[in-house]
Image 1 (cartoon, rainbow, N blue to C red):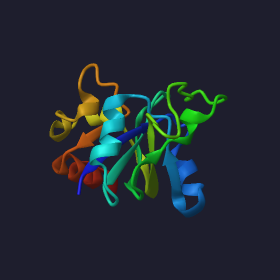
Image 2 (image 1 turned 90 degrees about the vertical axis):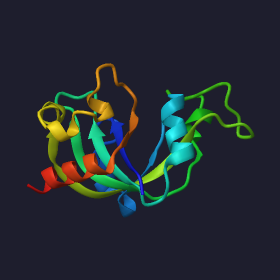
Image 3 (image 1 turned 45 degrees about the horizontal axis):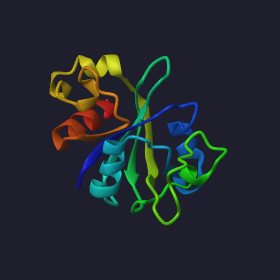
Length: 153
């Protein structure tokens, strides 16, 4: 089992949106970074744990827990000319981008980025590294355990 931090802008898809959706599941779409796409395509597996992170908002941070509930499949938004995620080079025969389904398991208190920076056990987390901008990053089992423990407090 692996663990991931997945960033979403709450005005696009928030933890509240996921928890209110049918079966508390949503398609993770719109990823347009090759490294993040490769994590989804090559490493994520059904059952992996997800830290649902709100980004590009007044107070970024972990807002809930989720899990991967599907294998990768072509992201439909790459084919929609009206979508901001449209990719003219992508075709149904040769898709460039993928989606994966994520199921919310628990909305939590917000564990802010500022608070995360004060916890020594998290100092090596990718999201806390200078210049880190990836929307999907791996999380170690020790980091996952630390965060889940903090969120229970």
